Image (cartoon, rainbow, N blue to C red; front, side, top):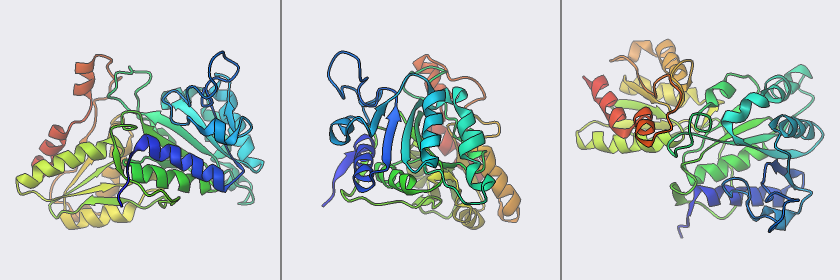
Length: 336
């Protein structure tokens, strides 16, 4: 029997199940336990958007840790805890704050397995919010996953469905390498689908073929998968068959699924909410141009925002974001 739940609830369920199955899993972050020490109800918040609410009462303050407002301190502590035998899930409230805590990830967590000859592990998950569309302004709306994917040793996960969010989170916590898990803030309650109650893992590095088609390959991640899906339906009404691929993880990247599709369709449109320069869309376009140039029937097109900060004004923010209409227009252009 189908059980339709939101991405918010799917993630909360994943946290509860991995903490029940493994006593070494802990959580840490700002206000994830409701601001302990402050007046008022314990567990009142559960993070700034309530994703971890309820975990404090079930697992206690030794495993659900409120931290000071110092990303440098607690991300560094999470890296150390991972090397000492725990499996921390650390919440970096917004990915825009990465600038103050990047060194423990860039120069420590990502390098340990390599520098110590494979004799150590760093089973760490850093979960963070990203994405525009909610009026959060230029400093709280960026999609910076490409910066993390650039670093060898870090795994980067970007779910687009509630089913994938739960399964990918469980797989990430069980993984022995550091994982950065990106959650789009506009999808917590708007995205809902059939999610099993049992604990299950979605393998890292395996793309999902959302729709099949023979005319154009579309590659998109996160919220853009839903925008692209809407464009696919519009194009289908015009007789254009689009194969929509959601990589789900961009490091590791399932190159084979993408390249096999492009080999068959001969046309590629890449949709990305991140900045266009040196970003995910540019990477996928370069991959296809390098490895299946002979199969291309049209230039590769990227649908991205402009290379500017994200506007705060709602009308400008909407124009800044890729849209289903722009994606459909790109599909029509490659078909010409």
